[in-house]
Image: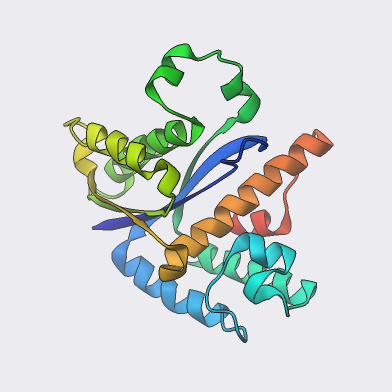
Length: 215
């Protein structure tokens, strides 16, 4: 059995893009990963990782200096790389979605999050077939009450497709603090989005240190 954790970023209307990222791996790989993740996260008064709060020194990260917070992120990125977890992602520029160039797509999907959600399901099925002998995948998405109902409808429609849907075993929405895997994909999502913003601003390829370490 495989397990995949997912998170999203850029769902607010002012965002430049909407991105959904996931990490998939065998369950035993997740067990080993979680041990190293918790070791790296042994910071006083920090119960779990949250990318935005860590970046801005908010919440549990308020007392930590910029240097310590950066070091923590880079170390956690190294943990993801060490365990060779497979990353899948899907994104669409907000201006492309708002341009109404995709009328049929907009009829099917309520918003860009659900388009990216469906694309990730397709990627997972293909990855399982090519790299994991068709093993079934249990999905855990970061809790997003605004989008979960329609996401479940997409999932239930997708699993009825015999050729691809049989690779998906279950769908769960959960709070990020409960699963290191959700915290890890939160880091991936944040670094992906910030890297994209940097490339827009400079009009050239940019790699933040966190992204470099993930790659």
